Image (cartoon, rainbow, N blue to C red; front, side, top):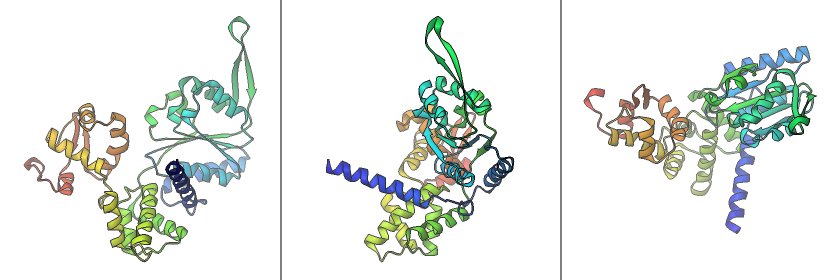
Length: 335
């Protein structure tokens, strides 16, 4: 019982730290420059017309800043951001309840929007398109449709799986933006900013090492920074040096490029069991005892971004760089 309470408290503390590190102004939001410029333009134009901005859809890998962008839009507009998730909008009544309580010019942020049920999704169509909420009251021959006018508002959707959004829902967003992995320089800037907020000293070598292991993702960079801070506090003088980062990564079983054990297992499985590929997703999933979606959406994108894995029409193939990184003899055909 006491252990569960401690774990819950630790989880709450982590969430609070994440909120503290989240940028609150456009200047503090590092990276995604093209997306920022386009969103700022949409907001400024809406302000000049005294309208609510168009509905926005952000998609990309987890941890790239989709939620942060939504809250920045709300702050820039000076309005409240009402937050929910796709799985929470399962029934028509769930959507009706949240839409009927939306305030003028308020922002409704829906994370994991691809997981809205189809029945609930259809209620959104007239709401997004013409600010109407259509509800069916009663059953059978006596049933009738009631139409409720909604105030101006903006829906911001976020998803890691844009391909799972239905075409009718996707088409009702005024603008869609893809968030890419960050550059190494941007990640270093994020780490320096976060270290300043946390009040921890970090040397240049520590910044570089953390940035390289961050998977080009701000959320991962901040998570590794917090663990390096803990290590420096317990085993050092509180300063995050390159050595402290290396020891922290070793403790977490993360290598210098940010690969975790599951990433290495995936690459080794393709090399050892399937001769480096090509291998189909189903066979790889069975070999690793992981779900297809987890492999395709969580592990593969980063491995592909650093050139360790290729997807071909015949299946997944490990590259020469992956062999070299793992210290495995490279086949002659890849030399």
